[in-house]
View 1 (cartoon, one colour):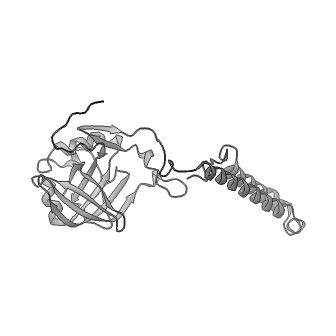
View 2: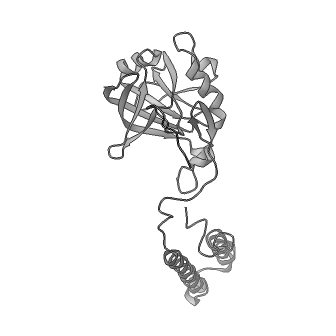
View 3: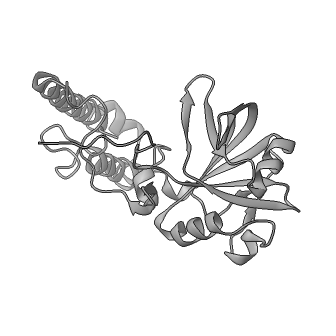
Length: 256
């Protein structure tokens, strides 16, 4: 195996590609940015790097606010167009038929068609050379409820996000693993399965004792018993402990 020595350059790909909205609800603009990412967890902080000659640069500098709008396969065309056209000549929201959504924590609009809008306030501007980095604190996010499961978890993969790699846009591939899967022990998986099985039997035992107890039957007439209790018990058992949802300790319900 041989490798060539190249001159210094940024070859870290793929990277996120986002549409950054700025300005106000009345006068706004969108700039496509690939130089962005997370830089701190607590407080949550991010950045966007923008060339000073870009139309959006002064808007962000003057207002000190912007919104990072997550892009998807459905927004790929608009993402590219907003990156190659200047806001000084075009109303990008109008041209791309995008909807302005009012943000509760910043004055600039979000893109309603984006599944996740990250509201940011600039904390510092770092002059680096070709680009200036707007270091910002995330003050809040708007998440599309359409992509949330019943427990309120945002399923990012369902949005079909896109990324940018050396001048080209790509969708994401299949899931390869989860955080920590490389060090998870088989015994841990077995213990988790055993614990879930124990919970199932415990639930079944308690439920049967309640339903078939003499005191319960005396206090509740047959109508309540047959119309409410039994259907409720069957529903809970079917939803959380059925064979499809509970198989070899990999229950869809428990592993969310």
